[in-house]
Image 1 (cartoon, one colour):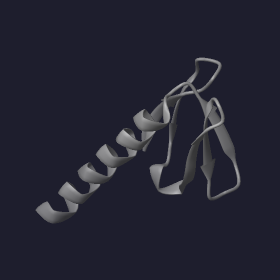
Image 2: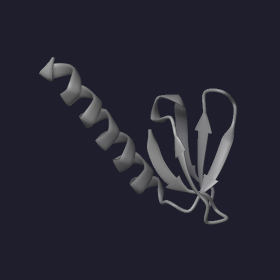
Image 3: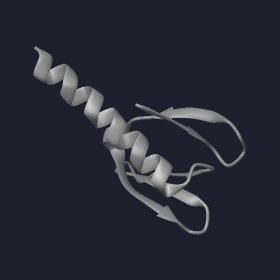
Amino acid sequence: MIKVRKINGEEIVINAELIETVEARPDTTISLVTGNKIIVQDKVSEVVEKVLEYRRLVNQKRTKK
């Protein structure tokens, strides 16, 4: 799960596993595999970094078992 800020300023948490694409159009648009789209204030690079950090944490937990 990653935290992002919607265009209206509301902070939400989304499932990083459901992200299909992240585009700058010009606002950052996150498309989910469910077909939903979320427009956020975060830059594309910030969303990508949050997803990468999430995956690092998940992989660390798996390798420690």
